[in-house]
Length: 117
Image (cartoon, rainbow, N blue to C red; front, side, top):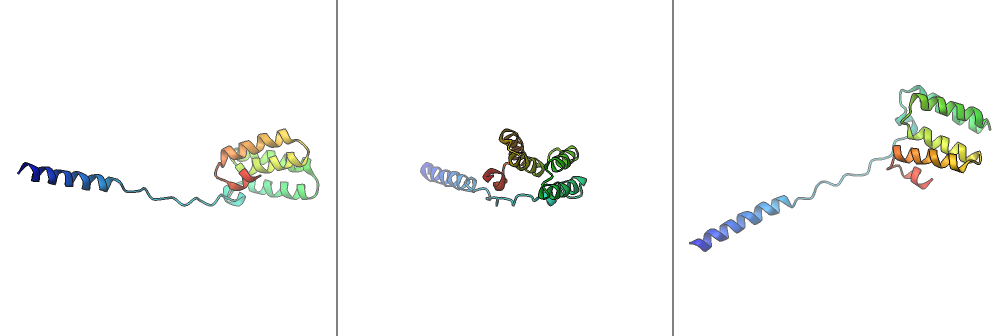
């Protein structure tokens, strides 16, 4: 009689343990935000657009001023830091670019484009 009770206890314990061995659901990696998503509804988005236009026209000083103004409005925007990093790199300031790039990575560590850049 004791062995049947022991067998039932072991079966119950193993069923409980098997129920605990469920894998947690695997989360799909989220798509990184775009600049327009990150800055949606913020005046910083317009400043970013102006900075891109100024940069395309070779006006890097104006582009930098627009980006700095945008950062005053949206200080946690990884896009703005990434843009400033690119601007500094194009101006021949790799150390300045690195600082801004690292800040962008800290704000958006899962953004593959930032890591690749």
